[in-house]
Image 1 (cartoon, rainbow, N blue to C red):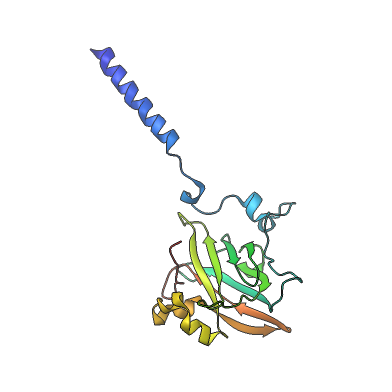
Image 2: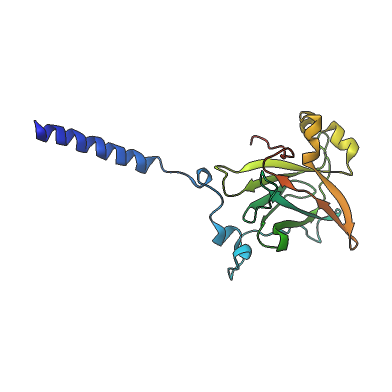
Amino acid sequence: MNSILYLEAEIQHQLKINKMNILKQTPSQTVGPYFAYGLTPNQYHFHHKGIADNNVFSETILGERIYITGRVLDGKGATVLDAMIELRQNSPQQGFARFGTGTLDGNRFVFNTVKPKSDEKNAPHINVVVMMRGLLSHVFTRIYFSDEGDANANDPVLKRVPEDRKDTLIAQRKEVDGKVVYEFDIHMQGKNETVFFDA
């Protein structure tokens, strides 16, 4: 009798182990971006280049050269030093860039790109993915531009955003040392929380 109970307990134990082995967590289910060696090596002073950097600009792409800079802020307003930001844009040419917020002083991100153009329906915008510690999965947002008021007013996505939260998606244009710079802070929580979208 005892041997039968022991056998049943052993079977249940093995089934539990097998289930754990089958249903392992995927990287996006764990906390934060931990592939720093390949994703943001500059931030951690590794001696090799990552597969992507913060540059989308190319002399062969026609359009206005711009810089996008900002910070990732937590719910208390403190800068996050180990977030990873990815930009994806489709116009005037497809581009992808990645940057870790701990790379520069002040924990800022900076991207060098070409200002996107509007199409028949959408205002100029850039898609953004944010990964950081404390997030069980990455989040998505967009960057729109403060000098595109008419296009922004007619953008189908911005129309669905509550009026008092639209500013969280709009980067502010400045000129710094003759360069066009758009400031865009990402607030993860709090009264100024950035609007995030479902994928």
